[in-house]
Every structure is written in structure tokens, then in C-alpha cells.
Length: 473
Image (cartoon, rainbow, N blue to C red; front, top):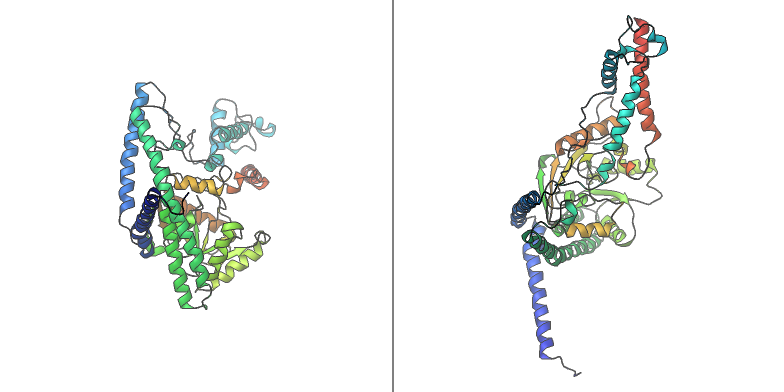
């Protein structure tokens, strides 16, 4: 081989150089610079509308093809398999006893069986054998239609978004539909994925470099100003790395310094979604590897709250660190996800009471993703972080709505649990989510004995209360 490159090699290097220059210029002009100034050209919204038309055509074509071939289409049960009405335990027991009494099956306790014809109604007896049927029915319903476990798996779609992982009806319907799906695979993996990886690397690199540099500046207004601008710029670049299309509502209610922002939790990218519209102080455990590098650089420029692994379980230490932060009105609002785990974008589960014990204003935020473009839910028991992020970057887009709710304060005579439930109910109502009392920790652990004891106490109160009423009469 000669010391000089052949003309073909020179041409190849020149073409690669031109391609790289054009690629980086397009990124800089159409994505990075608009992200720095918070400007959008409307390209993503046009892209979203085009995708909706393609999805609608693909779904109609799939349904028509299945009808022609007499195939059964899977339709997810959005509201559950069993229709349930919101009634209390006491009301259901009374109704059941009344029905059983009319059929002569009340089966009341021996002490009251001799007076069933002239004594009190079945609804006021101490115990009725028919109560057993209620608990058996509820147990079977919980097994058949478990409203808790299904919150930890991906949400089913009624339409098909040309992702094989999003609909059970995917099969060969027609050549045109299969070709369209193949074109989608090429677009997502050969164009969108490299573009998004480039943007993600750019955003994370700029975040680490700039926050490290800002960390050398003395504390003051200039440092806080630069830190906020750098965080916003880098988070907006990362948002574009997911082709995220976010609609923010009621921005006048955005969290203010010295407060605590709480939101429902679907995905790790919830942080990026919220932080691209305003700066927050993050709370979390110190990690190693790349995440640790990012955390150490961020805390140099902004007072984030990171805990060592041994400190996380120390509730008093955590509460003190949070209290000290919110007492300083010059510091950024704290961002917390009280559920403590990711839920599949259909419901809100129990909020941990820790952040509601602090005497501070709570700023609720509701986040709702549109699953038609990509499933944002992170099933941590099934996918690792890297696998999950690759799935996000190979989806069509991340589309979501964010609602800033009016600030809420703890009322007189209200404990932390009641306050947490009131905030949770407001978030669920605004986001169109199901409000559940169950603990999200059930994803990895068994039901606590306290939950069982609560149901037992509720039933015993009905019996004891009925007995006392009858004694007074």
C-alpha cells in the first residue's frame, strides 16, 4: 500500500465530512438553537398530526382485513372486566342481607334467629351467614379483575400505532399494511433513533460540562441565573431527543420557590417533562456510574438534595433536609413523586405521607401521556433503564399533557395522610386517572397486614355499631 490515499478513499472521506457537517448544521439550526431559546417551529405538531392520520388508516385497514378473514379482534377492557358501582361495605351488606332475607336465606346468628319474624330487619342483625357470600364474591372479583396488578403492566390500545409491541392484533393482514409497517421500522431505527441518540448525548454532555463550570462561580444571583438557564437549555434538548410534544396548562399555577411540587409518576422522563418548563431541586439517592457523574455535576450548580444509600431509610434525616430547603425561599421548589414507583398512566396510587408532613405549600401537577404514539410507562421489573430508554427513542414520539393545579395547604385538623389523599384525588381528577388507595409498593411486595386489619376493623365497626344501636332501642 502506498503512503497516499486513493482517489476513492479521498472521495469517501469528503462525502463523510460533508454528511457530518450537514447533519450537525441541521441539528444546530432546527433543534439545538430553538431549544436554547425555547422556540418551536411547529414541526413536531405537524409530525404528530401526520402520524394520527396514518394510525387511523392502519387501524381501519386492520379491522377491515380481519372482518374479511373472519378474525376476532382483541378489544381491551378499558374500565375492567367486571362492572363495579362505588358503594360502601355497609350498603352492600345491607342490600345482600335484604335479598337473602326475602328468600329465607338470611342465616342470622343463633341469638337472633328465634326473633326473625318479629325482630329487627336482617340489615341490623349482629351477624348473618349471607355476609360470607359478600367477602367470597369480592375475593373472586379481585382475582378475576385485579385493579392493582394491572397498573404495573403496559396500557392496552384500541388502535394500532404500527408498533408490534402495542396491539395483540398484529398479524399479516395485507401487503400494503406490512410494507407500511416495514417503512416505519426503517424510519424509527435508521433515522429517528440516531438523531435522538445524538441529541441525548449532546444534552447530557452540555449539562455535565456547563454545570461543572458554573459550580466554580461564587454563590449569588449570577450563579443562580446561569444555572437555571443551563438546566432549561439542556432539558429542552433532551426533550427533543424523545420527540416529546408537551402541552402545559394553567402555567399561572407553576410551583414557586420554597414550595414542594408533587406529581403522579409514570416514567423517569417525568423529570425531564417538568424540568423543561421550569427549574426544580431534585431529590433522590446517590448513584454510581454515568448517573453519579451527572448528579455530582448538577449539585455543584444547583442545591439538589441527594442522599446516601444508608440515609434514605432515615425518615427524620430526610424530613430535616427537606424542611431546611423549603424554609429558604430563595431556593428552587422541590420536585417529588410521592407514589415512589412508576404506574402505567391509568391511575394514581397511594402517596407516601413524608412530603406532606412538612409545613410547606404543595403544588400538585398532573401528567397524562398519550399512549398512541409510544408507551411512556417504565416497567422496571421487566426492562432495565438502558433497554427502556432505547424503547422510548425508537417509538414514534412522546406526547403528553401537564396540568399545574392551584397550590394546596394543609387544613386545620387534617393529618398528613388525609392531606396526601386530598392532593392525590385532585391530581387524579384533573388527569382523568383512577384514584386508588393501594400502595404502589405492592409491585414488589405482599399486601401489608395493616390493609387486612383495616377491612376487619371496618366490618367489626358495622357489627359493633349495630349491636349498640339495638341495645339502646
